[in-house]
Every structure is written in structure tokens, then in C-alpha cells.
Image 1 (tube, rainbow, N blue to C red):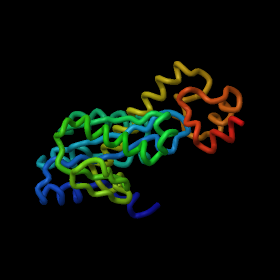
Image 2 (image 1 turned 30 degrees about the vertical axis):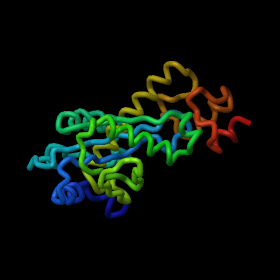
Image 3 (image 1 turned 45 degrees about the vertical axis):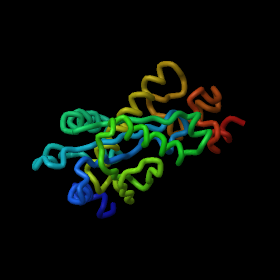
Image 4 (image 1 turned 120 degrees about the horizontal axis):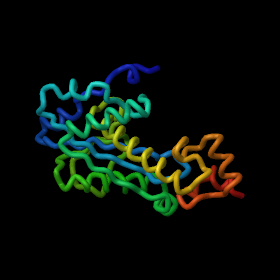
Length: 213
């Protein structure tokens, strides 16, 4: 385990942007980028950086991949109570097929920022920048591990997407979406071989094409 994985996210980057005059900083992250089925979900979270006990209030918030489903659900409620603003945006499987995963991810992130209604001064992102948004932006490696607002966004995006995939499992029986959330598990491969692609599968992806020949 790396040192980054042993550390907790902090507000160093957010406060640096705040000191530069950007008081409403949106941390942005996505979920579902590597899935074979379902949409990409992105979240943008604006935290009250002026709150002195903010890190204590959000103790336990970290990259969603480090948390159990139960932990993520509990932390989502805390984030909703504390955050100044939360925006959620989506990109459909069709958009992934049409434009590729990077462009679709940027669309989902841009839509999440738009849901904040203009109440944001700067963006803090994990890797990807959003060239269509004219705001100061910092795109950092492992921002979901390092930055509290991005870690919060990763939890929001993951929980929202998982809930959608669980709901879709009721309409598309047999694929196991409630269990694997559209990712490439053995169960998912077997379901594809037996049932073929569903309406929410990303048909342009090589693993899916190989399974559906």
C-alpha cells in the first residue's frame, strides 16, 4: 500500500484556491468509467471551506474505492448535510459509444458543474480538465485520495450510480447489474454469453464485442 493510500484527504488544494480568491471550489469525480454497461456518473461537491471543523465533520470521507457500500451510504448523508452545493451529471452508454469514454466522462462532469447553478468559482479534478468550462481548474493525479472535496464527489457519484444500476437490474433481469454494477466480472461475462447485450451495454467496447460475436 502506498503512502498516499495510508493518508487521509485534506483541504490543502481547496484552501490554496480559496486564498487565490476562489471561495467556492467544486471537487469533481466520476464513477462507472471502466464499466461495460450503464452510464458514467459524475458529481461536483462544494464544501464550506470557511467552516473550521470541516475535516472533523467529514471524518471518514475518502476515495470511494476504499469504502464499503454501507460506509459510502452513511457518508453520503453526512456530505449532503455539510456541503454547500452538490451537482450530479450523467453520460449515457450511447454517448460513450458515440464519442468515447474520455469525452463522455467530460460531458458528465460538465453537467454536474452545471447543476450547481453557477455557484462555483474554481474546479478541482481528478486527472481530467474540462476545456468547455471557463473557470480556473486544477487537475491532479489521485485527487480523489488527496483532496477532501474530490473524495466527497467520488462517494456521491459512486452511490448515485450504484443505486441506478440496482434499479436497472429490476428491468433487465438476468444480467446481475445489482451485483456487479456493469463491471466486467465472471458473472457478467456469463450473462452476456447467454443473453446478449442489453440496451444499456456499451457496444463499442472490445470486451463486449468479443462476448457478443
